Length: 296
Image 1 (cartoon, helix red, strand yellow):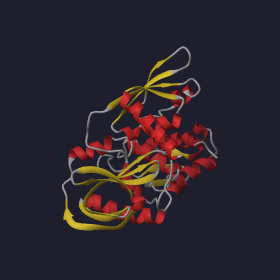
Image 2 (cartoon, helix red, strand yellow):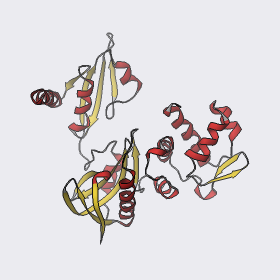
Image 3 (tube, rainbow, N blue to C red):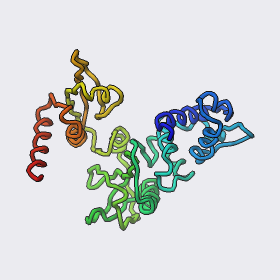
Image 4 (cartoon, helix red, strand yellow):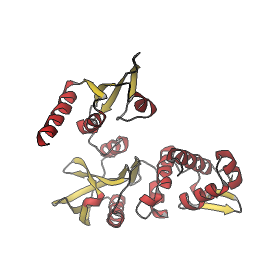
């Protein structure tokens, strides 16, 4: 199976070229990327099938009406989708058109690398939520045996390929797993979107969204045994490698808005991850472990 990172990078490059008006030749693309002509044809015919493409023999270009309308962020989003399109609920031209609309105004936001399961429920809910977001209509629904009324939906978020909706409930930003929503209905009343809420959602790097607030810096020590993982990629929110010690240990920092953004990750990497500051995060990790041991 093809490496997903290489696949995504190839898709990014192809869409970027199309977006600026280049007319691409399938044979030349195969040579540039070092893959077979058949692989490029699969990219064009399957992974990019939902783009408004124009074909002339082995030549491919983007419809003139769509040129230059995709941002770099949009292109990266679509690269994720096209690499795992079978994991998405009914990926069609309408879905992609909305996804690739101006990222700030689009009803969709995509991050991560896992997948969703119940496609029927997800698809039905997504269509209703997309309509509610586009029309700025309040919604009502059931969620985990609780009723929610007059909720203002702002954005559909795909985090690790699991769908959530970011919405405002009594002036508080919340996220709901789309697959757990039932009895979803659009109300006649409309709401006026709050720019601060929109900014908070678009700037968030995960599903733990709230109104803008001061972030917390967490400083940690990484053992030499796992240091290469943290050097290879960002495993923590807004991770920065501050120092590499002579014994192979790393001192890294991470900025978070919520404890839940990092505490589960710290516990996952223990004993190879040690919290230096703040002490409150360290104490919470220890308390969680002790609570688990008591239950066990």
